Length: 569
Image 1 (cartoon, one colour):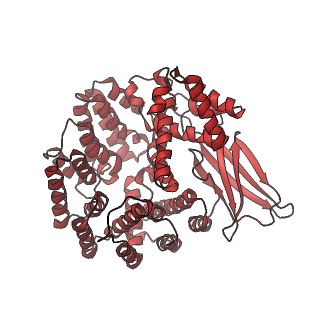
Image 2 (cartoon, helix red, strand yellow; image 1 turned 30 degrees about the vertical axis):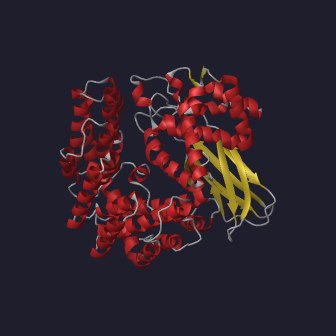
Image 3 (cartoon, rainbow, N blue to C red; image 1 turned 45 degrees about the vertical axis):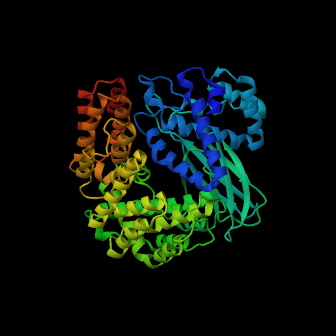
């Protein structure tokens, strides 16, 4: 981290100054070495599934916090990942060349010094000769802005109008919010997929209308916030047909992926409503054929980068979906998610198998390049989708891949497909993987083994994780092992953690209390998995609150108590 060492923080409140910049630089190094679009999707998935949740919870804080009890609690996805998004917005607003000049000025002015976020912003402003006063709101205000967009076309004047409004809900200690300075990368697409206009707009007021004159034809659909140009949530009047069009035709690869995610999200939320309206009967759910058509179009599009195909075939995470509903009906979201995956697998089994077999790398030398990485990612995605059918032929497929795997990617891919299907094949593969890692003395690989099982979507997930805590491969005092098993279970196994009898909550509460005695920092992070309790349905709300109350009664560290007390306010 040469940038953070050359220019460091004046105080802890300025942590994002160097850590946000470091994450940004790391992201761009990875983009340059691999695929810019793929890396962007991976980074945004983290922001949406983790940082947006933090922004909406009791621990919401600006990237430059104003106070803290335990500083360890502010090594967060907000300070780091949202901080990186703020750096990226500077670059979007200034342009790459001017941004580089501003970075050079920053290091020239402050090399060897301890400075503040204001010093960084001043370097950006001075190099670009721009007023970035309002941009400071990204440092001052917590929360994720929601941008609402609508559009119209005046055929007589040949003018397209795009109206956008921004709002941010109140967060702890911040009831009202001032408008953010938001860069909006926009593309207007025609019905034949041609980009009519590309432009960077600046949304600075609560509501603004932007006009695009001299357009001979009406744009079919706007492509908004291309490349995820700002960490916001978008609400628009785009129809499902237009989303499907963007998923197939947008020349911005990020927005092409995002259109598929929006399409799946809308369908899953529709299925949730159907499930709730029909006495929670899964048989009442029927997949919209347009969604299947969009899925199949992506699956069979050989012109698309294989990594982008893989990510566009993957469903939104539970964490992302749960942000779209209030209250959070865990059972309904989980049931709808399983249904859509299984249905898409069934309807497209033949094509999934065809693509899976076409990407077999047997006999080829293992290489790390963009194409081979993408092929492995797409092949494992196809296998994961097929495994939701829980049929013997798909189980056999996973076993065969596991036995023939020439790389950790393919070995883990097969294991992840087997782990959700209780069977002798599953148990044998898990034991083989563990013994191999043990023989080679590979602690990190054993942690991967723990992580895969912690995330398994099986009925007895709680009991299985408890058994793993007594396994010789689990080091109960090793933070990495704890994160691999307990944080994975609580943060990425919704069916297990949110089990209706409350056993998942009770188990994690017990672990927080025990960990608080030996590692308060990890205990506090684990306690934060209860942060959504107030948004749950009444039954789970009560169970989660009871667990938090128990932690507050028995924990003693400032780290854990800060998390719990803020959550219970």
